[in-house]
Amino acid sequence: MLRKNKTVIGSLSKKLFYGAMAVTLCGCGLRTRSLQDFLNDPFNEQTIVENARLRHPSSVIVCRSKQCAPSKLSMSREYIHNSLLHLFQNNSRKTAMVCEADPSTHACTENYIQLPATIGIVQGYIYIDSVKITDVSVGKGNTQLNLVLNYNISYNGQTPDCIPAKTSIYVQSTSNILMEDPGYTCKMNAIGQTSIKTVFSIDYIDLDYGYVGGYYSIGLSGPTYGGATGYMMFRLPTDAYPLAPNLRYKGNNNMSNAAASILEQESPTGTSTYNNTNVSVFPINK
Image (tube, rainbow, N blue to C red; front, side, top):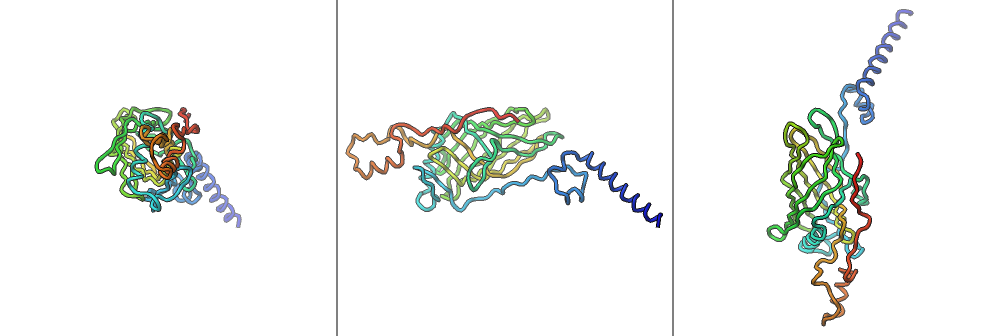
């Protein structure tokens, strides 16, 4: 009986010893892993990140004149294309905030998006918190917008040198609006260039306050590799009004009252513009 007790105690001692050693070696990795994952492989420090999957919405929500509705109910593809064109033209040479957001409420949950990545041999995160819209132009077939975007990227407290991303927005239909780029490069370490490719499926456009939201997928390839998917918002500093300043209704022609009323609903501020004062450019400490 005594021998059996000694055997049980010895077995428990070994389990406690190995458990303590595993905790010491794994460190903070336990914070992001379940108990089952730890029991299966206690020495694996891989962090499992849950993200929303990239998907195409059944309809795009468009807000104008303080009212929001699915675009497929009352708008055409051309209207969305033209509205996006004016929205980005009004924000040309300006910086837009980028944030991780909730797909249901379209409210920012963080002031940035983060991408888990392996930088050389070091595990870390890539952060994107803003983007400067350098250029806006109309593409082929009146369904495409061409943008030049400069993403503000940082990692481990450093800011790499990146070339601008030549980005295109394809308005194929009222329920299929895709923004993507062929990839742009960043110098993140001494080994070589890292390629970053972004796909953004737009499902929310707010012309009143300059918000554009959707599901994203961002991948990195090269000396630094990784990526993530999720839901993000672009917070543009200027709204979509006026759509064309030189064509605004001045009230001094023979336009009918009905037509004038429609224009006033589309551009309710007269000769002034809405300015989204809630958006400001500020550095984010990481």
